[in-house]
Length: 238
Image (cartoon, rainbow, N blue to C red; front, top):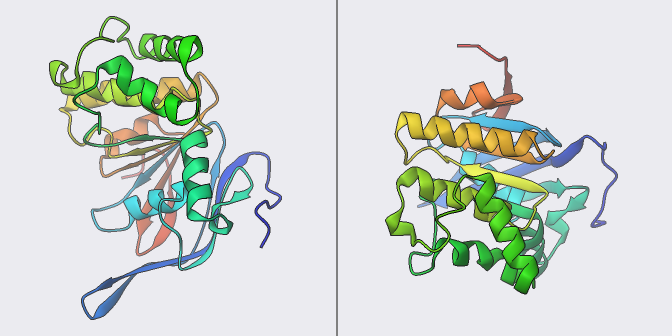
C-alpha cells in the first residue's frame, strides 16, 4: 500500500474500514469494526462518549501510537498504517501535538524547559527555539511564568503550559484527551475557550475527546461514539 493517498483538500484525517480489538482475559473486546470517519482541516471537532467507548483508542489510532488490526488511518494524505514504528514516532513528533488530562509536564523542568523539549526532539535549538517558546507562552497568557516549575502553578496554569507545549512545534494536528477533566468548571471553560481561540485564529485542526457536553459550545462539529460508530450530533441537541 502506498504511503500517500489522494485526499479531499478539506480533509486532514481519514479512517477507512478501521477494525480494532483487545484481549481481555479469554475474550476479545471489539472496539471498532469497520469504522469510517473524516476530520476536516481548520476546525474544532469534539468527540463525546461514555467512558470505555473507545474515545482514547481512537486518538491513539489517529496519532499512530497504536495501529488498527485492519483498515487504514491517514493524516494529511499520509498512511500511518504504512509506516514503521520509528517512522510513526518521527511523524508524530513533527506533526502532532498532545494535550492530556493530567498535564504530563516534567516536574523537574521549568516552564520554558518543558516547552523546549519537543523543539529539541525536532532539532530546533538556540534563538529559534527561544523565540517559539516565548511566542507560545504569550499566546496562553503565561509570559511571566517561564522560570517557574509546574508545581508552582495552578491546575489551569499547568494546562495552559501543556497547550503551549503542544503547539510550540507548530503541528498540523492537535489532539486533546479530556483536557478539562482535572479542572474545576470555570477553569475548564477557560481552557476550552483558549483551545478554540488558538485553533480558529491560526487555521489549525483540533480533535478533542471528552465526556463533558460543555465542550460542544466550542465545537465546529460534534461526534458521539456509540457502539463503535461515530454519529453526527446536531449543535444544541440533548
